[in-house]
Length: 455
Image (cartoon, rainbow, N blue to C red):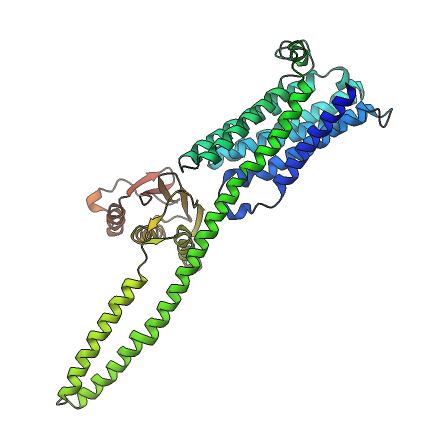
């Protein structure tokens, strides 16, 4: 039986270490907007540290380093607690929470870990190296009940919530994998957080390893299976990243083709229409000196018609039906940089775009650009503030844009008396089927623009 336990611990630790190494490898998180990919490295830290801690159990099991068991036990418990903190941090990062609230939530695992470490070391200093082996209550309460159990549950909830968002994009297979991974993390959190050695307080007095044994459920085999399933499912889930990258590469190729077409159109504009107009100008100059030349006048009229036709063809071929969302983002960024270079109010941009929600027509992207430009102009001219913020977030059904400043606020100006620029913004928003809301906030003005995706 000990040989079976040895193999299970070996495979269990290997599964998590392998998962960790896979997770921390560069997945190009800066190129994607998937929360899972951006948070994956923290899951990787959890996997590697937890797997090493499991392998350290093999040292005690095989009586390696005899006489140093208390030290090995302390290091193993410390590694597990650190890994559990990373698991909770991973789950919290995945939750769809924004702003300062998320910033404060993310420090919870670190605070719990510091509290555990201080108490753990103090008890060892007070009662000896083997205190925690003989009295596991402190370690169980902090690391198990406050870290790994909620960490597993939070990770499961976050993965499930992400799966629902992915379902809205009709990516049912990927959403199904997210849900499966959520279930596995929930099982892991329960197994590692509840089913431990039997001690005198709840829930460990009722739900523990002895209960599993009485039900003839081999806890170590179950844990080993969970480790293997986490590893295999995560690899499948990361196919999500490959899928998004293919979409991105496809759009980049389309963008490259569009840029090349624009370059050719620019050459055509210069070599065709502009040259014709230049030649036409020379003929008009000659006609002004020789007004009786009827043949030249007829030729000028013909040249004008040719230039008109060429211009029409040029406009027709250079008008795009849709614009990639990255183009709009980059244009806004360049506009902000120009404003920041020429005046004192600092304008910042925070944009969270995703390729998978929808597209914007040329008309919509143009109107959005000029609405934001007008809003920035108003901040600079009228807000009397020191900074402006533009937040752009892609949601499932619409693009959400918020423009804020810390100035004197728009006040209670009647709509009829509003500045002409504000009326222009309202008109542009209505033209593209969007909604614009302008209101005063505690310190400044907030403008919210919501624009639905095409189709």
